[in-house]
Length: 252
Image (cartoon, one colour):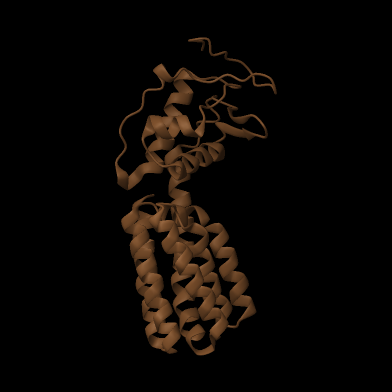
């Protein structure tokens, strides 16, 4: 495909090709299923308008065309990488690597369904583990750890005021609670869960209202920890995670 001076062909370090934006027609996407719809529409455009070796439009362009967040675009691209349509190349970008019938044999919908199931199970593990950790942390937390969590929430609030996602602060807060619970095995498990669920935390923290509610949930948990109230800490963590899980699963 060639248009408006954009070259199409296999990418090299000097030149890459991309799709003509005038032909990259997409539809408005409902908020409840953003990234799955982006993946489906993006797959259609790749199959119809592109060929192996073509360069995918930049992340910024895709954000503008679809009118969605960077997180949704990244999730959609990762899904199409799993199908085999796209391949990230160091120093170049994301490239179309196959548009054959074999590559399309696994529908995007099935990949999304499998990912949703895996994430749902990981979130279920969080719901089993973290309220119990909060309960235990209330009995073992140190003054230093309380101060660390207060500092984390200050940074979270500052990012909220700047309308920036506080993904790192969210992870740090939950990790510090696990640290306060004083169990090395559980601490490692929480670290693994935080890593696997990084994308879902980014998605759940999109929007000012959601970030305000996340901060409020964290403050409720911290207040119970400061009182040394194990039952309240466990209940506050359960309420917080229930809301997080509802939001995440709505967006898959």
